[in-house]
Amino acid sequence: MTDNSNIIKLTAAEIAAKIASGELTAVEVTEAHLARIDAVDEKVHAFLHVDREGALAQARAVDEKRAKGEKLGPLAGVPVALKDIFTTEGIPTTVGSKILEGWLPPYDATLTKKLKAADVVILGKTNMDEFAMGSSTENSAYGPTGNPWDLTRIPGGSGGGSSAALASYEAPLAIGTDTGGSIRQPAAVTGTVGVKPTYGGVSRYGMVAFSSSLDQGGPCARTVLDAALLHEAIAGHDPLDSTSIDAPVPAVVEAARNGSVQGMRVGVVKQFRGEGYQAGVVQRFDESVALLKELGAEIVELDCPSFDLALSAYYLIAPSECSSNLARFDAMRYGLRVGDDGTKSAEDVTALTREAGFGDEVKRRIILGTYALSSGYYDAYYGSAQKVRTLITRDFEKAFEQVDVIVSPTTPTTAFPIGERTDDPMAMYLADVCTIPTNLAGNAAMSLPCGLAPEDGLPVGLQIIAPAMKDDRLYKVGAAVETAFVEKWGHPLLEEAPSL
Image (tube, rainbow, N blue to C red; front, side):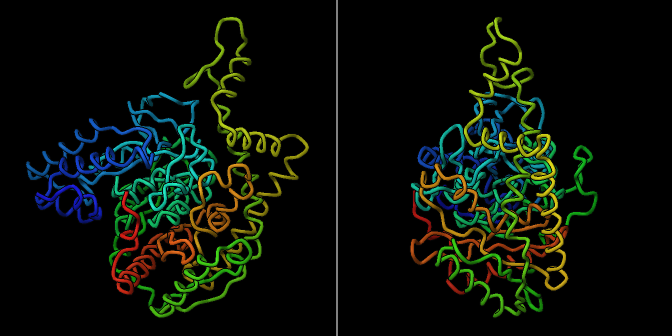
């Protein structure tokens, strides 16, 4: 029997193969990861809720299927950590907020159903910035998550719990959501792989809404192939989501298994570097571009001037949509209720509940969004931001006439210390300067490790951006880069992460 320390270091693809062959049971794999959570999560705080009984029941069901000779899916029995923004029937869904503390949803999100249908074992729900608003997971009402590379630093946000679960070997797979970079930025600072699929490629039904025209669920993993296998499991058309794309899922697994950049045109955008970028991040990015050239890619310089306006446009559009979406949390239907003592009006109860239930960043964005949508300011702010969004989309369209994919640093710096930017919202927002344009245009993007910054020894992420519905290009390029890195330096970068 393989011991737990070996099991948790396996890739998802390796785990699935060992379960299918009978070398491991799904229960053994699940127990190994639950034991790892017990051992380290008190320090990391990746999880908000661990569903021990449910996970073991799912694992036993997989083992029973195998014993009966039933066909198992590509990820059957592999554990996953699920961001606490997707509804899970009978299991708490808090979205990192006190306003939903203790809420037990009566239904599963489509993504949750797809995971269960694929026989993926859901370990529990991961920590996140409240309502996915943040870049550090410090905005969680339940306390921050630590970066396994250095527990005094942030694991990224809003999906820091999912990325930290991967980097600490508490789960081989995780699910995140990406509104302005919340899958890719955590992947970059934890040395893991994170993918934002094309907008509409993965159903949003049952995903608690922050900014509906930007939100997108996606896969997180430690390898490109593992991310592709998870992507394939969760993607596809959903009639319950009006923005879901009714088209075949791109061949992401095939692309991950056949990585190559030979003959591809790779774009480098001049707007994705300059002031504010850490020297070590720029160095590793430049080395990655040189590596792509060595692998047979043609490097093309691109000028996308509207990208400089993306951050400003995003922080008008996203808060505007959030102010509308979060209006449903009124203390009348579900969640927290404060002040309902029989003497106060419904309006007073709603106000008291929102005051107690929403954190500072959520309140900040609701106020910003409500102001931007208010009479007399709508055209000046929200309307102008939507025009900039159109310009960004056009810049991408022009760029993709010249190149197959675009590459950039994922984030301008490595993981910063917990608390360093909590009093400076603008500094926090700048963590997403490279990732936001993709959300505004609806394209697909990936972050994967491209080395450690020399000055602090922390992971640096390489971002790959592809046109809408060309998600397979991410995996084709990502797999080629990953293979080259392993061959060049002899081991996956994550093996250098400090032991917890």
